[in-house]
Image (cartoon, rainbow, N blue to C red; front, top):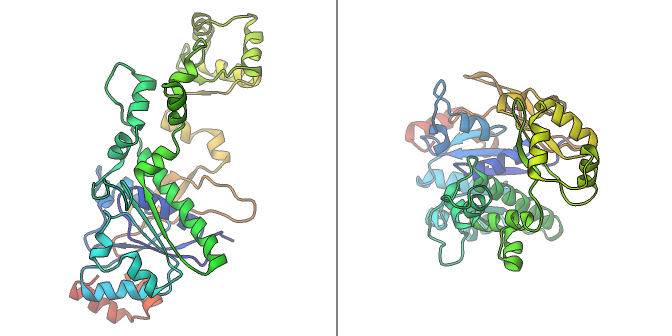
Length: 376
């Protein structure tokens, strides 16, 4: 049993923020139809290509049925509108106004299907003076203050720092997922769909505790946390690697001082205690003491972790051209339903015949005719 069984999603997304949202919907059982232009969405081309496939797309495209469709072609546009009649969710992350110019904006689609949930992710949302600005992950990191906060935490005197992972895509993707699920619940009560407008900038601001600290103390969360106490926890070098541990005020720090047999902690004392031990020794001792701790693991070590194995956080995905791949697993563990993210990302247009015959009642010959005409 899956939580979103019976929910159909028409997925027009590209890049990262939209696709990660629909990937999680597919993992929870939604019928996600990934609709791409005939040349494919941009992440199919993200380097480095391996056997002609992008690792980026192989990650984000899992669990979806892939079709091609030219929305600018009148016949293709009509096909999309026909599919909307029996869909639950339309998901897009185009620049604001793009869907309206195609004649496929929310005001049009809700007339076709009043129950449709229309979800949109953009850099700055569909209102406000920056509505027409384009954005990708690093732009949202900069506009939300996240790059400044990262700099303030790690290198106060240096330039702003960009996160190496697409944090300002991932958080908006999850924000949109929350909004879609809430809209589906609301629809169960009202019978009406609605528009879910998610901005990257909004999503980042909404999750950053530094603004609360800044407005009260004029310090970021990291700097405020360090003020008034000696910084003895954090990243420390062992005899053979690095560990990260946390010593918040109270019982945990008291336990650590009892372990060391001291009544006061200094950075030098902690550094010396850690440095004379191996990483495994430090982790074992602190974990047993109740101090939050982890070795700083590289990616191979994470994949080999017994904890990750026990939680099924790395799974095997069988791809039609790439063979067996190892990919991150589904991180939510349900007691009654399940999440499955092991279906491979689709080849370009792989499911054209299957989807258009199933959703629109077309014959295989009709689908081939559409291909020859350039509609799909």
